[in-house]
Every structure is written in structure tokens, then in C-alpha cells.
Amino acid sequence: MTARMPIVGGNWKMNTDLASAVELAEDVVAGCGTMVESCDVAMFPPFPYLQAVGRALGHHGLVLGAQDVYPKPDGAFTGEVSTAMLLDLHAEMVLVGHSERRHVIGERDDLIAAKLTTALAAGLKVVLCIGETKEQRTAGTTRDVLNTQLTAGLGTVDADGMRDVIIAYEPVWAIGTGETATPEDAESEHAFVRERLAELYDADIADATRIQYGGSVKPNNAEELIAGPNIDGFLVGGASLKADDFLAIIRAAAATADAGSSERSYREARNA
Ligand code: PEP
Image 1: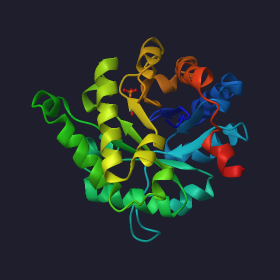
Image 2 (image 1 turned 90 degrees about the vertical axis):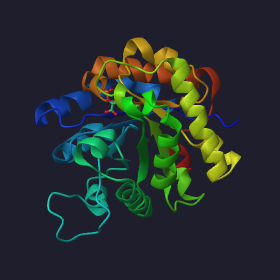
Image 3 (image 1 turned 120 degrees about the vertical axis):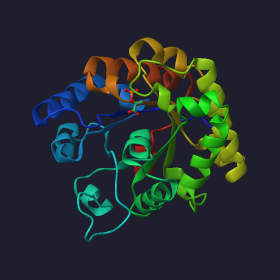
């Protein structure tokens, strides 16, 4: 089995102001130290703070990410942001299909797929977020939902493109609620996603693709969640707004790599 480098992302959503965004980024950089050698760490600030946060991240090995992108190069798309704009600000990664985009803004799978392929074509790494609502879980349709969102979201991405894709399994009912999937349930859904990736692509790609868990991850549950063999890190909302909490979660993920992996981060591999 491939040793997958853990990856932890902080999705700041529509939080912080300019000063607190920079301070948060600086605190995380200062606390990360050598952990970035055993865990990829990404931060997704609001669009207006990308540049300032990017400066704060400097060249310390952390990744600047954006919370969304629009799948057109330019033009009359009021309020939207293109891949070229993100690249101008040195963003390297982008979230697509976050549950708040799906369920609050109303994005559908075809738009999400277009965002994903456009971002990949521009050279960005993409985190494709998928997850079921409470009603879907209660109705027993979780796997149908995950399968649909995964298959439709990946759309026409080929094997090569999958190198730059990360999946985030985020049960909607666990996001921002303080309710978390049990480690057993999270592991079981991650294993299902990996099985589906093997069917859609092949065993090697399934094995190499990182699958993050998201949904009320906190310092006190990160360690037991990351123990799942198919859980490769976290996408963190609320707890990423507090440097100490975010760093504790990174520490839990980095410890798994320290324990079992000597794989280089994608950044080192890319620069080699
Ligand atoms: C998220 O925004 O992706 C998320 C998982 O939020 P929280 O950690 O607050 O549940």
C-alpha cells in the first residue's frame, strides 16, 4: 500500500478580518515548524484576504488555498473569481463542492465538475467535497449520495488528473454542529469512497488518493479519527480559526506520518 502523506486544511469560510486573518496565518506558520515535512497543511481564507495570508505563509511550506472558483476564464460573471486570479495570488489549491456551496448557495454536480476540471487544467490542486445530509443518512441513501457526488464531481477527470485531486468526505450533519461521525462510520465511508475510486480508475489511483474527513473535527477527536487506515487528514472549519486547536489537529495527523511513512510531501515530490 502507498503511504499517503496526511493533509489538513483549514476552511475559514466567511470569518476573520484582515488583521485577524494575518495573525492566524502567522500563528499557524510559527507553530507548524517541521510538521510540514510530515503533513501537508493548507489554509483557505476568504478571497479578499488571500494575498495577505499568502504573504504571511511565505515560504514555510504551507499551502494557500481558495474556497471556491468559477469555471470561466473571464467575463460578465459578477462576484466570481477565476483560476487566473487565484494563481496571480499564488493560491495552489481550491475547494469545490463544499456542502455550504451545495446546500446554501445551491450548486449542482455539473457546475462542481466544471469547476474541478477548470481548476485542474489551470494547475491547481482540488479538494472535492462530498457528503450526505441527515435526511439522506436516515433514509439509508448515504452511499448513493456519495457515489453520485463522487462520480459526477470527477466527471471527465482522467488518471493523470487524479494526482491533483483530494477527496473530502464531510457528512453535512456533522459540519459546524459539534456532531462528528464515529471513527468507525467515518472509516467505513472512506473505505467505500476508496473502493469506488478503484472501480472508476484503478487500484493504484484509489490507493494513492488522499481522502480527508471533515465535520466538527477538534483536538479531542482528531487522534481517534485519523487512526482509520483510510482517513488521510482533515478539512477543518471552526477549529481552524483558533491556531492552537488547528495546530493540535495537524499534530495528530503528522504523528501518523511520523509513525509509518517516509513519503515526501507533494510539494517536495513536485519540486524534485
Ligand atoms: C468545513 O467547513 O468543511 C467543516 C468541516 O466545518 P467544521 O469543522 O466547523 O464542522
